[in-house]
Length: 94
Image (tube, rainbow, N blue to C red; front, side, top):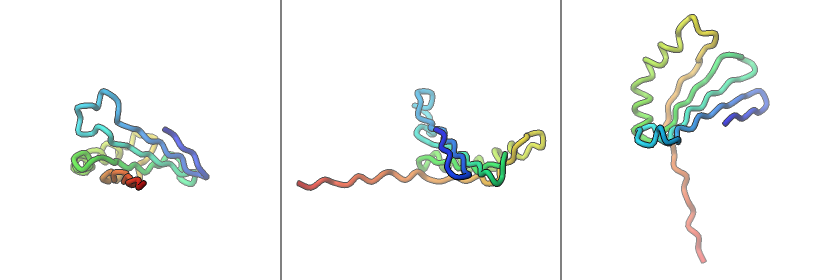
């Protein structure tokens, strides 16, 4: 999904397709933000369940080094991970 709002473009990749069904990354999201004040510079947030978030975190150095390739025409400013917080359901009372 892509959301554009006053100077910010946010692209979210949802890893919830059948290809990820047996993966620890199933249900994770990758959010890429670009601000109009810094074109071609991105902030990336990797969000998932505790296992996925830990795998993301442990592999950040490798991912960071891949993004630091001087041949790339873009830059990654921030690269963060976080644990997905489940949506709390309110109990209905009669």
